[in-house]
Length: 169
Image (cartoon, rainbow, N blue to C red; front, side, top):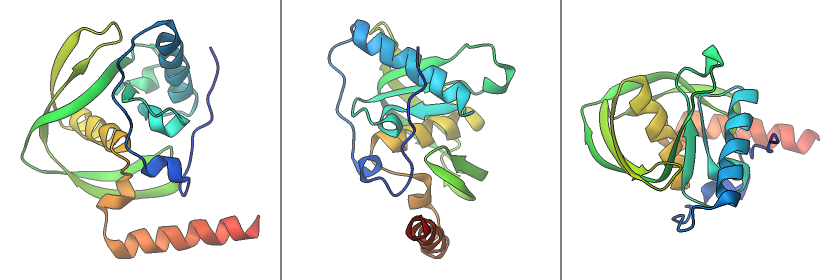
């Protein structure tokens, strides 16, 4: 296994929607293991393939990653098929948007369908933190960052700070 490089804003690859995965093979299983290793090392609770430069529709996640039990889950080609209510995700952050956190409005309950790591169909109903986590990672697969869901003023302030830091280096 190896730790992958996590792309950070303003990398344009993060703005691209991923493609459905059609072939679940040994290469994909290796990518899944590397993504999980990267997520835990970061440390994070979720990681989308686009964050590591892979354009397949794939996420790994572990809402209890701080326990370091390695019980991550995998969703291939995940789609939110239902959403209900609203919740304020307080102090949301992202491995691809380092050094910035903000409140984000998300659906309180969602139903997600996709495939597990072996290609078997799965359906997950999630609420609260798990719903927030899944929405955040699925947004990545659609080329969206959480900063796309905050006020334009906060987003512009963050972008200015990032560009200023890039120009210093």
